[in-house]
Amino acid sequence: MNYLTTLMFLLPRAKWRLTTPMPEGGWTYEDLIWEDLFYPKPTKEELEMAYKYASLSGTDDYRMKRQSQYPSAEEQLAIIFDKGIDGWKEYIQNVKDNIPKPNID
Image (cartoon, rainbow, N blue to C red; front, side):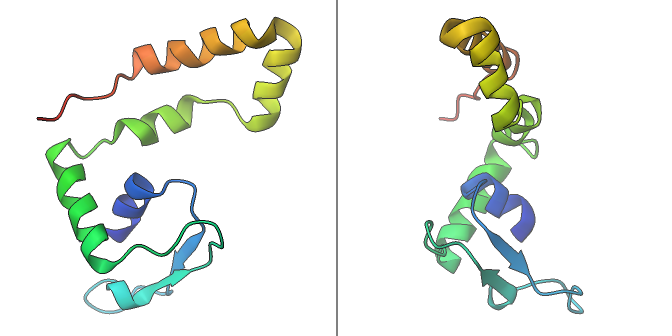
């Protein structure tokens, strides 16, 4: 299982790391070092379920694609200052329209 992709899919803003260097045979759940005080560490079962969901929705998760297109917090504040809340909403909606959320049945 790819813990990097799965954690980015499940908790894209959480703070965590994996032991380095990668152990022979790859990382396991026990190699996950949780550093986030807000989000609780997901269980091994939750990670496995998220991995299955991510693989059903395709290898390119829309949230990671969107995140790369969103401006930083500072840039978003500048957009709000220059163009107002409606201008900011328009910018964010444009990203969402260009990278739609997939329909998974």
